[in-house]
Image (cartoon, rainbow, N blue to C red; front, side, top):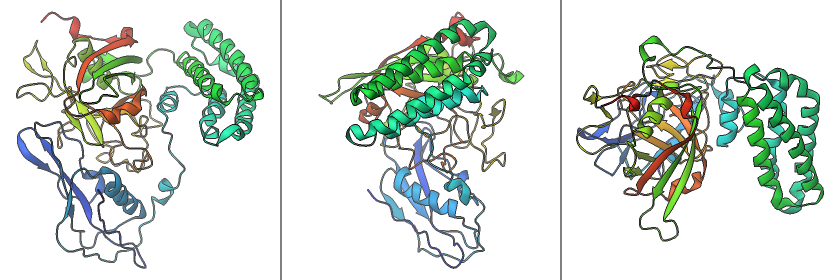
Length: 451
């Protein structure tokens, strides 16, 4: 479907209609977002509901409101990518001239966002080693080179490989010096494999074997990511005291989520590999791993699949989250956002509420299959068990022009089979979620407590 949205430009920028989605939530037929002077005040992902349909509505522009190019662009983004259901027009389109407002234009033209989940996870690590990043970047750029048809792509691939190899040789000493002492032997072993692998990739290119490039690139980037993880020396900060006794993931973990797909003869079941990032979301990721170990998600259905997100985690009965048997109350966690450039997350407030309008999040909603915690619309600290995966491509939801960044806690990315998320439907069943690595990074696990 298509949405019509007014984005009128005069000699100065003007006000426009704003999209005001109404999404279902338990306890009310529809939860209507409130008008605000800021686009970012609108909430888009309340918790799941037994109701399955979504309505959207365009609201009148506000008289005398300043309207920037960034907001105009985001309005178009919303119309193109965030509407689910049939929009209706409410009132006549009246626009009023306003003074020019251009301070955020640079954000929109700052270049394409990174949308590969592996790259996002590598850049999210709490390290500062330029030498390894100079090896990483040209290896990642091979993906762009492979978009060129035929063997012509190999010329660009060769330049990337040579650049990575040169950076490796020049920076190897600095890379080794950046390894954590306790992990140095393992890191050096990985670097030896990386060096050999780049030589093998160079030979693949010389043999003009295009089909072998992508698998070898994936292998090399795995080595790079593992080396970078070996540069992290312990957990880099203290979680605030009020959350310190909660289940915390102090590092990373990976889970495999097996989904039984109904009514799809070409896809009976699928296993999604998900990397959870406790460095940037220890409370959120720890809560999820703890629930996985309780088998909370085993047998639960996909409860929302509307082309925008896939969502699950709403248990049967009146509760909207996990009921902790030790307290017989819903266990909730705070909103947790890591801002790029900061040493620790902020808790309990959106970036807008903190006035950080231009701040980038360390874990942005860029990748297809970005995983985040759902929450009540007007309560930041109401996340419990409901999670969602973003399906929209990052061209429609770019970093820092994305209404979700800084409002919902991202804590992981689907790194394998993420494309199949789009095939999931309401009623498909999560057969199991299993932790396949990193369980030793979970501290304060409540699932081990009797009762």
